[in-house]
Length: 419
RNA sequence: GUGAGUGUAGCUCAACUGGCUAGAGCGUGGGACUGUGGCUCCUAAGGUUGCGGGUUCGAUCCCCGUCACUCACCCCA
Image (cartoon, protein in one colour):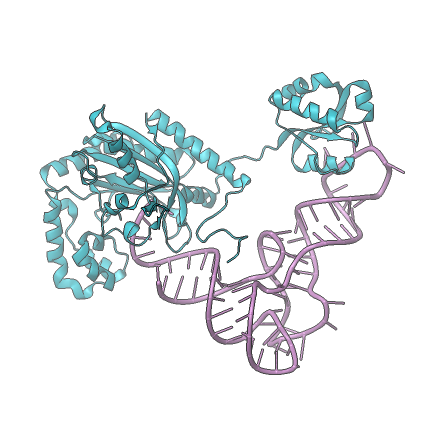
């Protein structure tokens, strides 16, 4: 095991790349502000039991969790998703009894023990939204609009939004039964995985990518046909609102989602250039989850949006964010004048100038070379002559012209030149 | 967890069918009027060829193992 290598499925973001992340995060905060969502920050680990409640047929909790015992013997788990913790916090702080809806967003790292591949890391970053307390279709529509707005504003094109409805406690059992009735006589045509799913979670057969399964499913019953009256109205309402907002979408009865807690509306947003892991955002309504986690019956909607995949899409799409602007001033000095140079440096910084200074003990020539390489707009030379006259030689690196400026005027001089 | 591919300098890549001190470009350091960058030129540093074993007179190259990375499956953001 190499200590000079990060753990599998993790990555370092170096300053140059971090600039992209900063833009991505700034944008998400501004969109959330406009939509009136507040940020919630929950711990990165939770009691393992919290995630176990998410459902035993969900791979995310059964085989992909980073679970460990702490020194007190408690079983804790690095969060694999954001909804469970948000719900926990919502209940823990008694917000169910307060003003509803509660509209939250979160950003941060999630952890899943999986085989890494493009767009899938063991530690990855997710941006998520949760609306607690609202059963209205406006909540579903708003959440979807927020995701689309954000992705569009950050610069993505070629997005595909697909929506579906999985029904509720009342009508889902009917669909499940219909699906099993359809699948059982065709069981031998399904792939091995789907034969297992048939018992545990037949809905998953719907989105199997195996060719023969797809062929079988071409004539399978659609969940939309089994929807009860209220669910149908709700789904139609969501679509109407999306249309009213000018958001284009496609109804895809095959969208199922991997977390088991979804009810009614589910949706996915994918990006064409992403390869196998093309889903950049996925979410839906989960009207039963809060109750299952020990709260009163409370409707809710939300989504998770993969920021690593978003950054990947931006790269693939060649979006340039024009981030490398260099610095305003680089202070260059001769041996023996370090104090004067450093004093000027701090004056520059105090006045808002982006400034840096030589600290490698290089020759004046090498310092100038360095100033040029790091794209300094000005090199400010402090040497014997300058100190004697109380000035600094300010060299405009682009124009190749220089002049002597009284030391005390240099910050103002640079600031105005950089406007 | 399964499958396939790939591991040579900080980065991108060379090295005929196994054969001399493993090379180049970029990048980095120093220099070409000892107070001035960009272009050009010179020069230096930097590799246990992922690691361990095997075959061979000889392995970067062939074989086995191992680790890592990449892509895909599963699943998901």
